[in-house]
Length: 207
Length: 121
Image 1: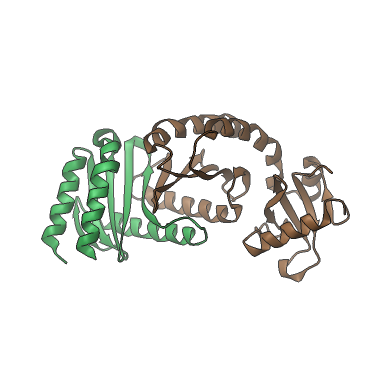
Image 2: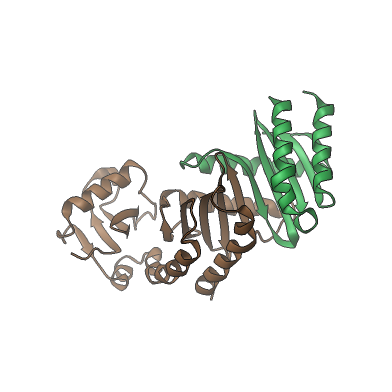
């Protein structure tokens, strides 16, 4: 049976607060779930494992439990802002894969919006994205007091030669990338890769 | 704390980055400056606050510990914040066109961090 990219899961369990969750699927796994009523993500740690267990145990054939809907149907039923990203994510992901394919040492990457909705990604836990975008907005506000305007990107060095890159696109979208420097030159990332990724994302997200 | 040694290390960083250094400060986690060049209390307290926020964001992830971060902004401004441990931070505002980022990241910053960590441990 074909696996849907998005769907509505009806859960009658009080632990989630709501009975309906919107699920985002990548490669057959639930990577992001949120309540359309509160707008809050619920896909963190054990909860995510629990959701995946539910989805797998139904084998996608209990349609009264998991309803596969088209992008348009979902949007009309729930008016959920994240839904419109389904078609955009396809446009973004092809070229991104081309740019990053073959580079060893990539832990994860993803594109998400300022509300923390994941648009496309690889091996990225979307549960942290909302926190990242809030931190970015507060940082930019504070930097203005030091006359530091229009942030191009953040580059962070972690222990074990791991770097993470946070690239804002038009202040509304973000590209996040975490990699090991022993496999990729930081100079290449800063002087070339960042600009190619920004050009590609701006064409689709800002146009 | 050997303030003379700290001054020597920070001054050498300024020479390495010359002529691109706009300002720099060694400060504690509460944002109080210990020593700086073109020192700014505003810069220390804002960088301290930003670093705390980043640490909190990273607590929810499985990322390795943060050592330093840089912010590349308009007009070639580059902000650099290093976490030296024991509640100390080093922050610098640099003109990235004048300072040669390769030298900053591969020579000046690693040497500064290593020396300051020893002095502050």
